[in-house]
Length: 229
Image (cartoon, rainbow, N blue to C red; front, side, top):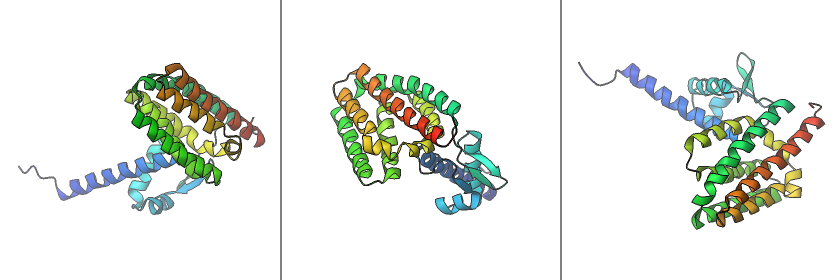
């Protein structure tokens, strides 16, 4: 009996790999706030955006709806959900606990190279904020946070945090322009970098928690402005 997979099996595996790649790309875009709350997506649009066929695009959408990152608005259309006040509060409380823990654990693993990497990311964030390129700022903001969380050496914890960002990522658009004008996030990040440089566990945890709390206050106001409580 031959161990060589049949042609149909090879095609199936290739489609699975394309589906996995499409899922990872869509997931990353949602986490980084590429799509705003309420944004509608069709299978065809996702396929064109990711340069894949409709099958892996549909697979990616199905997986993301199962994870709550997208919801069906019709047989062929999904929408990025808008978080209500209760969901926003629950996600924020969980983020404070888990991201605070990851930050605390990361502090003792910081190196000069890691600090310089964060400074480079912050420079990109600052430039984007100054020029009103908020989508770009969000893209780099995610990398800033997770560069710290990955230093914790707790990959399962980081994976759980990522699932929370999959829910909150699109809503982060509502931070702007206030966050850019008042520089809340910039100050919190500066304190975080200083704490990492000094290997100050409590200081790093406090800085990242303050960043989450400042964001929560702004997102709550955005909900009230939309009449959502």
